[in-house]
Figure 1: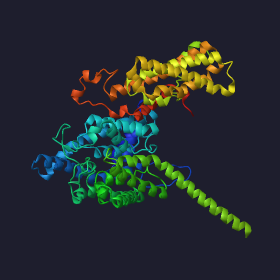
Figure 2: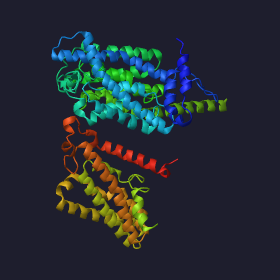
Figure 3: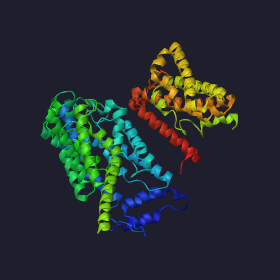
Figure 4: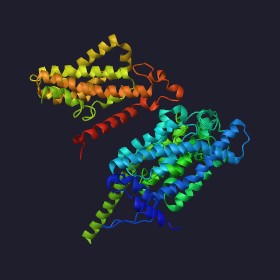
Length: 386
Length: 205
């Protein structure tokens, strides 16, 4: 397809003179459409065909299976709860109409703040929000009021990201900051039994329906089977329920190398080991739960694939990634089983390890330097003796 | 330094919380509501003023090697007095403030002003310096108390503002995070951010 007309149009509208202050905004849209033709001339640089905008778009594409399934599941849950006999397409349409305002609010509020900051500081617009803005509505209950969502997005972008200098400087995952804000500020809308199933197309009324983890936290056995959890036909945050849809996204992320396989694998490994440990203790029914249930319930899979692997906030060294992932999985299961006040441990566990990631990297690097210094000393000695 | 500066500077360029970052602990702990914040602000102002005055009067007789212990004795005496007054006349607030009245002894603003100012200045400027710093601390405390009570509990001084405005009936809800100390820290951070963007000379390079 010949896109020259678009390129020409961009050249024509480039802001100059009195409109020059809009440079950041223009630049953001221009590089969104076209890879910049300017390259760094001085020094040596690693060059890659994939830049940040392109890699963020791949994350957004990876989210689409979970998003589409989540929309259908919203309608499915409502039809099951109300006993309405809906066609599967109508279920999806119902979910689409519920999700659309949330996604629009998230993008509008977040991008407005991002553009305002970029203009005020005179630097490029951070494209990271394209993924964050979609992630936020995907990890909250469907009945979250829109004004609360808007507040959470603003909090996440300003406190979670911009105060530290924008994308790449944040040490916490912004989407999880938004969720944590909602969780602590408006707990009645984020947990319990009356938030997961929308009662109708509009408004924030909900039908009672517990998530598997909600049931477990109150000492009951989950009513959904493992297969239901795998497919995702259970109540939960909008798009986190289907492990299969998330796995499709995970495949794309791993195939393109955007997400680290070490982190993804080690999160599951850590969660599984912790689950097995609890199985061995077997003190109560939650502890006796088969370990793989933890992968299927709640936001474990979603967090492992899309949140823990965020390259900005994860550990950077390969060894550090293993430690980081293992501890995320282990802490998530520990919180779930041992603290009934926080039925879902994945969010807090990832945020906690986000804070620890720089420390892990520091220790790994220091250890490496120590090892090499030791080796250098041995070699130096041998050379001296020889 | 001019006497008026002693009162004016702690409000902006030398604010004990925003610039010196002292007294943050109590500022996070007691500001969930306006009333305890105001009482705490008054208590600290009284203590820092009087201890500055007393230490300044005694400054030439205190042996330098035991000055800290002398300062502590003076401060704790004043804090015990304040505590007793609160218990006698404002028992409910005293209960709410609990241990934090006693902890004024360890408030870095009090010790900081004694060490940095009262030990080497005459009584009248010392008194003014104590007043200025106490008020500088009070401004931040009362601002935090105002914001946190208004958005966290929907009340001001116990008066249900948000309910009277009819906001609950249109779907408004109180923000639970505002009542928690972490949010106070974030709010202090935001105020420091605003303050520094207005006073560029305060920013470190």
